[in-house]
Image 1 (cartoon, rainbow, N blue to C red):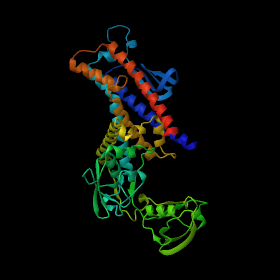
Image 2: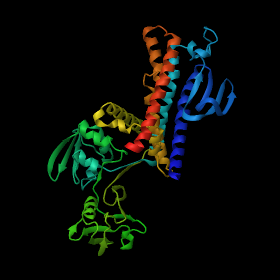
Image 3: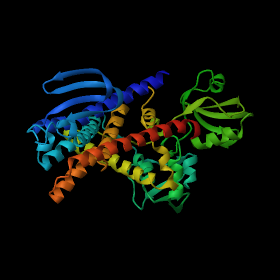
Length: 440
């Protein structure tokens, strides 16, 4: 229960930051053009609010329904108008370009927030990469990797006919790509990536890595009260053989443990340069109770590159990171409309987003996810749907092109209809998210 609470708090804090920044964008630009903002609310407040206070011409408050937030700008809706004459401080009295900028303020601030967070993360932590050329043992794949045609020990040469310099970028490149060229035991093999194969990558509960560098079977830690502890295995032991079969890589160990489950085995171990042998009985599931080291834990084997940045060097890289996130989201959205990829199964509401946050508080992951959600929110608000910022932008741009103002009553009706449509879609997504727990 505590992990659910921690994830929920992180989600609520992240959404609060995104909403406040988005609405602050509208607020600041409106104030810049001397347009009055009547209400500035975090979360929605139908019937009542948790907190509110009027300062100047604006009521600031917190609603009880944590599904977003809003600013109410004078002169945008029909109920703002006492008569047909626009007031100087009303939205409708301003030029088309000023109205365009006021509506764009939220989107712009979300983009700036994403860039700022990525910039500060890069400045503080830098980046650690594993060069592809240093993945000397090839790759280890899970069942999903096998379904798209990859095998343990494959060495990835190109994705989409291009060399990918850093292994960290290869999984993303594969999801975005159309082909993989590999070295399989000295033979050059080209695998195509059509929608039927990509459905295996999308049709899963978690978008985790389906490939990783192949590593030797070295114990990271032994689970307490496990069979491994009972037979005297220790952290950092390197497993060399099972019975008379040599074990070079972690994937081979997993296969052998599955092969000899419910049997006695003789395990050969390298412990600080000494050869040790242990007679062990494997349980019916072939589980020892050990966790093996991942490639991130083996910097003595894999040569990583660490990049550090000054603050000003971090800025262009922060922009690049935000752009990469946006490109990935656009690609995912494109695949949602290709039913055969089954990317639609990854669509989710707040429940799905909450699961992306770690069960233990981690500021690095929190800010990375917040930056990702911020650029995603900016992108979604660009959709030309009435009730979203993009709907208002569309009406204003039509006005600028035709040089004729659209009837305000039509704009308001479209906005109301758009709100109901978006609310209906959101309810469907929430229901879909709940159903996935039981049927997916």
